[in-house]
Image 1: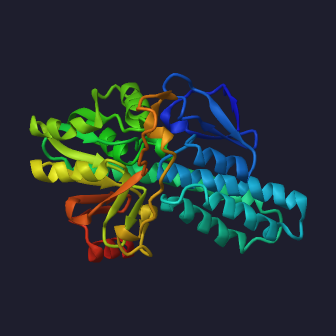
Image 2: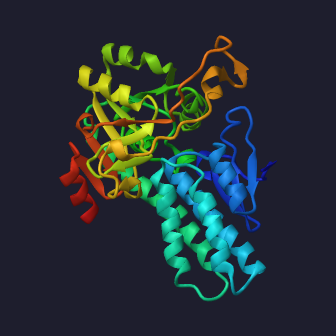
Length: 352
């Protein structure tokens, strides 16, 4: 992966840029101190960027993978106009293996597979158009999602959010942060308390960066402070995103989400999950069936590359946890709202 500086305005809605027939990803590992892009030229460099957390957030991962398929198809067709489909299969597998939990990744690759099956000539133009359409559709869907979510917030007050769910994690505007943006525009949110989100500090580095740029009042807090913040009063909602929603409404999201939901229920605070329908996986019966990615213990044992733990200590580092559906008051998608989600409600929403 090669880092470059692009001559474009850097903002949350420019996390993925197609320029000069290559994919550029805003390196979210370097924010907020540096605003640089990583250049992706093929499937492997795209998969490496996804795996290394250059880009993260389920919708953004799916869109990035679609661009990666287009890059790979161009390369394979140049390699062999007759055998490009067989050669491309290896690239699809490489992309699919980059992150196991975010179902949008597999949804995007499956959409590409369907299109590939219908193509006869050079596949690159059609696959690039599909990736760009996914990108544009996600941005528009997030706007709709934001309006649906904002309509649930009837009493003005503060909200808590976890990890990063804004333009950096999506095609633009954001899922949970998109709801917050829309609700703030309506005067329904006074301020946002953002968990710092250890160990990658997405809340501190990314969510705070987006909120400050939008001039939305933001207070950063340690993950462990959320329950005390709820107990102090004034918080009406916890609003989070998701990387996979099971058929029964169980929600996989950034580690720490489950404890937020438990604390919210205890304190009478409503709990909202905002995610596109592509995040709902009807083939996964419940949260128990969702594969949970575990990463390098060094991510917990250090901070910013500096060791913070006693030498010899180990670390358990799951990236996600599962919040049971019974702790979720509402799931919001681009189609509307699922109140008190369960298997029947989720299925009916997908059929709508």
